[in-house]
Length: 437
Image (cartoon, rainbow, N blue to C red):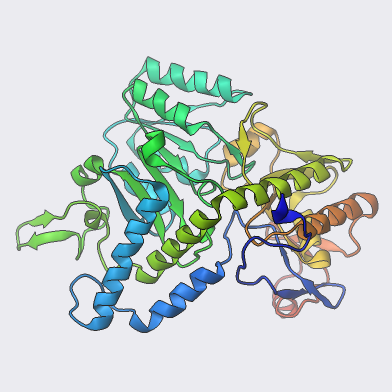
């Protein structure tokens, strides 16, 4: 486990790695980022790629100027890089979107029938299907039981698509995707995998698994420049109306009609996000190179985090299934006697540690846990064992002694009172007095 023998060793350099932030009690401290699952910082190689391309940025596909030709080649090369990253099959196309939510809404408009989903999904993989016939399967206490329930649902009534998470955005638990793909195909359905949390942590092989569609976001893949991906079988994409009607999506237009292009351009109308696509491709290249060491690095840090939290009295780590076969670097937990938002505010204000709190756009899943909100610590390439230990020490201190500062809730968010940190203190002074209920 050489990747984490040095407590201060990160696997890759990310933007903000040397960021120091103010503490509410005074002074500054290195920022410990445990919010990768929401938006990951840019990898150094990604930032370098964008900086390199910026002087050549121009409109793509129909420009004769040298920058336009360079931008076009970079944009289409990015598409091929993503294809390689996902090991796409021959009939699968890569469509660039804004993010995972955008990609799933695009696909939802193409599905010729019902979609079966689980009740644990992120809202991005839950809400779009309601417009085209959504059937919700409640998960069981085990993965095996959950697969049985999906099997029963698909057997009882045909569906066009099974939509599942690759890794839970709340608990990080991973489903057996090859098995689910075979199950969907057995019942005549296709499968789409929401890989927003899976792609930054695990390799995805569409050809080997048979997965029909996969979606993910650049901003969770160390490329926060506004690009996402829908990759998958082109027949549904070619048969559906364009996601957006406009230039670039057509081959011919008259005053009476339009001849639409095939996918992927059919669904990429308007000026595309060239820089975002190039950034995303750069991240794919780095993750492909680091795949084996990244998984080892992450497992060691995740085990250290979960084991440490489970050893603290009053801390509960959340799990969906008792038999989940794998878990990416995401740990959700609660602390007895403290609201999640208050804990998150304490970690930030007094310890310069960033975590996520709330319901994580997965309200039905939090309801299954019987809680309104939780905390989520997520690990990425820039995380270190020293960061893990800082978080554990801060939680232990909270449980043993409570926060050393006052906190109050205003408009649903907990804030230190008084707020002394530069940039936030003036904002707090302009706002209304916080409530203390």
